[in-house]
Image (cartoon, rainbow, N blue to C red):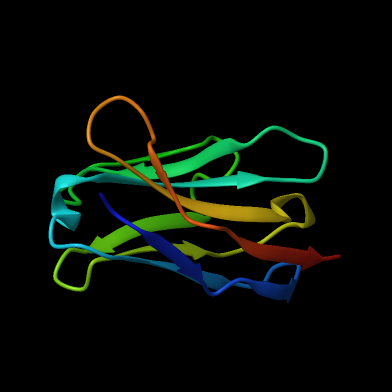
Length: 117
């Protein structure tokens, strides 16, 4: 099992940047595909980005392509989400998640990101 803890959320003006971090417990972090999701008020949770176990392949939602970058440091058991050119519509609770195969079985508690216009 893995336990996840997000940090780095906050309030930022439109056009600004934030970097989210997700620290994972356990010795098998590199076995997990890692992802970032978000959920805005009144909306369903959506995937933002995910990264393969070795960090060589990343995938992004169309809404964040070119603005967000997901990365991981397996030596530090941490996955990051660098968010640039933030927009008010990026306002949401951001969740870190992990999976071994097909299902995102492990979730953090979330961190709030608020982008003011």
